[in-house]
Length: 344
Ligand SMILES: [Zn+2]
Image (cartoon, rainbow, N blue to C red):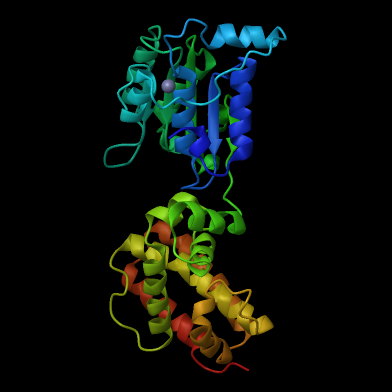
């Protein structure tokens, strides 16, 4: 895997390559954007590119100097994928490249991990040009870890680079954010992604590809790793049960409950689209047109939108540890009231 294999994210990649060509690598980068769109992959490949073929005499700096001097010497802006350095980074055993992510019960990045990193960074690179620390889910730095890390950011060791990765950028301390150069990663457009799924990932048929692209919100990692179609069926079954006869315990755990509320918005979106326009071509779940039409026929637009708002509010409150059974009863009651009978 190298930069050339990363799909989408042209803007972020061209900025990173620009750093290499100019020979000006920032001390700290912050990759922000949704889960599953290639942030971490890009970080790893930037680390590989920077440390690629470190035995070559005219290393990165020398080459960059010539380029800034007006020479047309080409700079290596992608990882070769074959040298020992690239291999070691792929395996996670490169002595100059560090991967940090939340661990333990609380899922936090603790101060001891940061202290250890500081110690490791205090030496010169062993093999590569750069010492690179990739901090995944950087918003999970706990307060003391964040403070310790802040000191490092203020006085970064020479030849070191920090890449902070987060899908919840607003949760990172502003003092840390402001010391990093931010690169935003965005989801792929549906058309581009559908085409790629068919051409490069052997997804059978454009219909299926379009559905996956839309359901995943343009997040390729999500579309490829999760069984989205199965989850969709699961969520719709519960959705319909809620309106009809409610079965006990439809969510197996809190995560499932949390996820279901996201799916419910998707179904309500299609029901309202159908109710407002009668068109199936702009629905996401076009293959469920009959079921959706049946629900839409039984209610009105105002109730659908009201329900969407109510479910959104419940979803927000789930983080306050709402009781699962009470949530289920209440949600089902709302759904029966607003979708289960004629409101006109
Ligand atoms: Zn290489």
